[in-house]
Amino acid sequence: MVYKDIITLCQKNDRKAQRELYKTISPKLYGSCLRYAPNEAEAKDILQDTFIIIFEKIHQFKFKGSFEGWCKRIAVNTALQRYRGIKVFDLVKQDQLEDLEAVEIEEPDDVPLKKLLVMVQELPERYRLVFTMYVMDGYSHNEIAEMMKITIGTSKSNLARARQNLQVMVTTWREYNNSNAS
Image 1 (cartoon, helix red, strand yellow):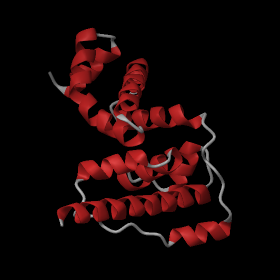
Image 2 (cartoon, rainbow, N blue to C red):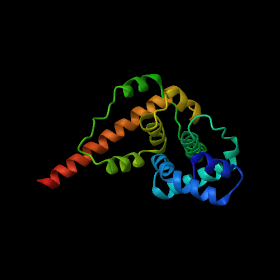
Image 3 (cartoon, one colour):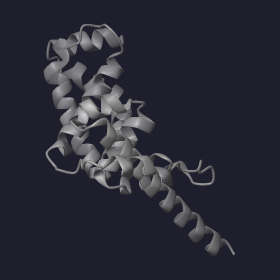
Image 4 (cartoon, one colour):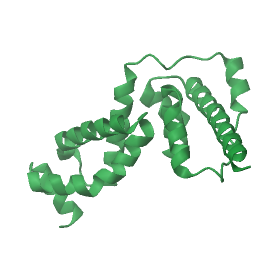
């Protein structure tokens, strides 16, 4: 069955087509959900909520642009909506922001990707969300600020703090592994 045909049938509430679409696109969307969630259980909940919205709104998809991109945007918005009610997006003074912008995380070539993803999941929520949106999904600070209902400065400071926290985690992981390797 052609992708366009599956979407068209889903727009007509065809359950078989919905199952097929879920099987086809859920692994990719789950990866996106996992990057925003603090653990696998939350990621699965976000994925479930995402598909409910996709199937409710699929009639709005007009076959302009990427369907996967459209679905991914729904997944990101669903994840953000889940955390939006939590008051974690603190404002930061400008002088704090300037200090934090200089923080860069080393390229951790020696850290396995799975371990890096676990480290990202361990970040405080506000840092994890901004880091994921900016670094992994390529959103600009303007887009992040708009989507998360925060200022651009807050987005930048949260990214810098996420990098700072990740740098500490990577350094700690390296020290632990080097001491156990000796």
